[in-house]
Length: 253
Length: 253
Image (cartoon, rainbow over all chains, first blue to last red; front, top):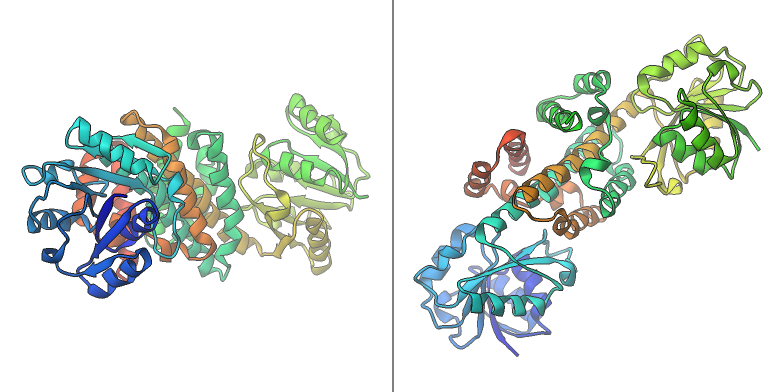
């Protein structure tokens, strides 16, 4: 069993640690905040620390799953021990390890994690990149312990995936927030939207989103669009206008 | 069994007719294009016509499910026969019937319909409005033949629902289209997004979208936002910027 150190205790770190705990021995969890390290450590049978100097030296895999702008500082704070060092960031290049680790790479799970809503990790798509071909193979084998969907992706491709995920997940979810605001203004509950949202997503199993697009903008129904705009205020008005224009430009082509 | 005439053969008309065919007798389907009328009529055991003058006079319910800007013309083209006349539009007021029908109202199913992807009608939320209290009750009873989720809503509330649905369904789906474009530029398949999208939607069962919002804008990660913007072109750049700003303004509040 591989000995793994988890550096980080946020949503991604927690989901990964829980998925790994029966396949590996998670020996230690680090977090800047000791209580956070402890609360994850206790769930995966590991020791907790809030001091990078106290990291065990003899694990085989070190997973850095912290905020993007702290990754480089973590790499700098710990000397190379020849183990496999990975980060889990969509938008950080593998070059963050350059000159500082011999065996290193990226293990990027394309998913929106939350501690309260654990994802089914075996279905999550992982995108991996190693510093050389042998390491890439090693990371792919490691990722396959967790998921059936493991792909190789360059740092550039991974950034495209992250941008796409911002649209498909963060921005789509923001549309749900804005819908909730529109309903809330009329005292109507958000729940009435759920069947609609679920159908919209279910269609993606056998149609492209472009094919399944419906609504006033897709129909070019300028009268309805104008009537809707007249009822909107704050940034929802600008967003309605920009997105309708964006949909119309694609419907005509 | 109520005798029903379906005026229209589009996505909403088709889904409604299929849901009604075992609860009512659908006697006739009208479409401007005879072939369309026939192809729906044959599925529900009705007669087909493409001439409003040929509508049978003795049905109990007439459902006008045509494009919003044609509803008034249909109402004008057919004299009142005392039956219950309904339209299915989210954004058309019940006043379209004023002075032209004695018993009339609205039967609005809040769903994104497509002919190829039939919705489970018993779960769809219907919003109804009648020209008076007795008619409203009659429409509610009629709607309950199809769905468990029947609500009364004024024309104004219905318009809010429609605007909200444009955000939650049409605009969210457009985010999936834009994600697909970002991936396509890198030669990556859209399918890798599906687990992510499904998790995002599954979270809505026990969190508000505002609570479950993740991503660079929700974290206020301006460095990643700038890096993403630098890779985007056409209207995706404007959309990324506007939506990130919109998310950030709500995260701070």
